[in-house]
Amino acid sequence: MRTKPTFSPFRSVYLSVAATAAFVLACAVEKPESPDHASQLQPNVVQKPAVGSTQAIKPNDNMTYFEFQVNRLASPRETPHLEYPPAMRGSGISGEVVAQFVVKNTGQVEMSTFKVEKSTGPEFTAVVKGALETLRFDPAVIRGKSVNQLVEWAFQFTPPSA
Figure 1 (cartoon, one colour):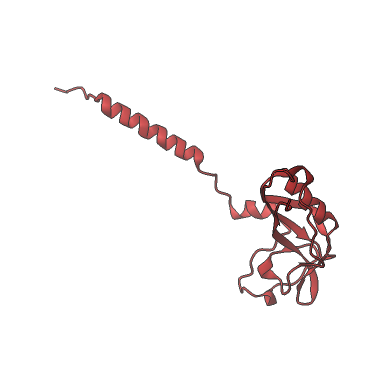
Figure 2 (cartoon, rainbow, N blue to C red):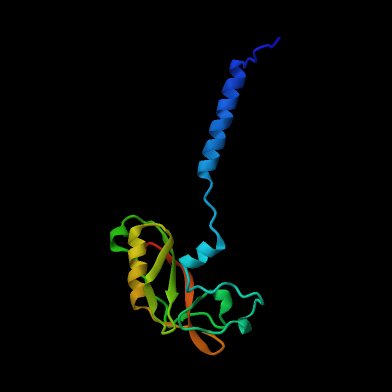
């Protein structure tokens, strides 16, 4: 003879909560990207060389290089003058913008690559973007040749003293 299995109410609630938690966790995890897909998203970015030195890199005008891949980093020819946003003057708030952009081998910022990693507010971002449009750099260099470089730069704003 067989007995019919029974579930206690506690066990039913426990299994329901566990199943819901597993579902929520599965939804929260980001989908992994294959290396092939990531390289298709940014085909002009050079991956880290296996040797770990710039001697293995052959400079190319169409490529964009990271800091660790160049012999000399791209550097601004002058210190950018960032004016505290007029709309924020009465607030007394300090600001910070962390921006990422490509400095071309000509020393100009390629504004289509401008990306904000972190910003205290859109007013500060607008000031940084305006300054970068006119700012000129000494381009990055690999083995004596000017190349494009991806730059990440933090800009600080302090409120003007009254």
